[in-house]
View 1 (cartoon, rainbow, N blue to C red):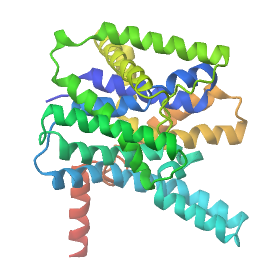
View 2 (cartoon, one colour; view 1 turned 45 degrees about the horizontal axis):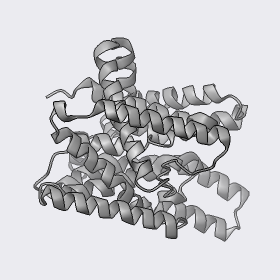
View 3 (cartoon, one colour; view 1 turned 90 degrees about the horizontal axis):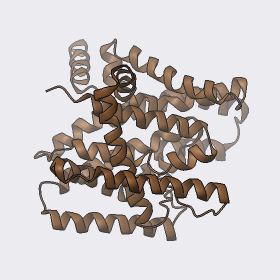
Length: 341
C-alpha cells in the first residue's frame, strides 16, 4: 500500500527546518528549536504499529538506521582524522577525544556530525516503544510516558552536562512525543482538535518572539541534543501543538499545492541522508566562503545532500549501506557469501 504523500511532505518541512535552524539564528532559531526535532519522533509514532517479534524488529531497524549511521559517520570522520594527524600527530589527548567522540556519539558529536545524535536516540525510542505498545493498557502507557517525561526534566535540571553514550537519555524526552503521535493516529478525525492546537502553537510562537524581542531569556526552546527541554510540561505541550498544526499544514499542501508537495515530499524521502550530510555542505561553504553566505549554505545543505540521496539510490551497495534498504542489504550479504563460496 502506497504511503500518503502528506507524510513525506511533513518530513520534508521538518528537514528544511533542521537545515535552516543550523544555518540561521535569531528569531527563526528560537521558533524552529521549539519543535523541529520532536516532530520526527511524533510522525514516527503516528505511523508506528505494534510488533510481535521485537528481535526481528530490532534487527530490521538496525539495518535501516545504524548501518547508514556508522557508514556516514566513518566517511565524514576520515578527512577529519587525516587533518588531526597532520596537525597534531603527537597529541594523544586529542586523538583519544576524537576516537571517544566517534565511538560514543550522542552529545559528544559536534560540528560536521552534530545531527547524528538523533539516529541512535531514535533507535532507542523505537525499541522501547516496540516493547511497550501492544503489551500494556493505555492508562499504564500514559503513566509510563509521563514518568519518562519527568525523568527527562530531572536529567535537564540536575544533570544537564551528562553525556550519555549515543544520546540514549534523550529517548526519555522523545518517547512521549512518539506516543502522542501514536495516540493521535488512533483518535477519530472528528475528535482531533486541530484548531485548538493551532491556537496553542500560535500563542507559543508569539511568546517565543516576545522572549527574543524583549530579552526575557526564559529558556523556552526544546533543544533535545543538549537536554534543554524548556519550561516543564508547557514547552512540551507547545511543541506538541506545533507538531499537530504542522501535520495539518502538510495535509493541506499535499492536497492543494501539487508542485510544492512534490518538492517537499522528495526532501522528506531523503530526510535521513540530509540529516547526515547537511552539516558537511553548510560548514564546507562556511570554511571556503565565509559564514555570511547563509542562504548559499542553506541551499547547498539541502540540495547537495539530496543529490547524495539520489545517487545512493542507483546501486545495491549504496542503497544497502547509505539508505538502509533491508532487501538490498540481504542481497549484498548474499553476493558476498557467493563470492566467498
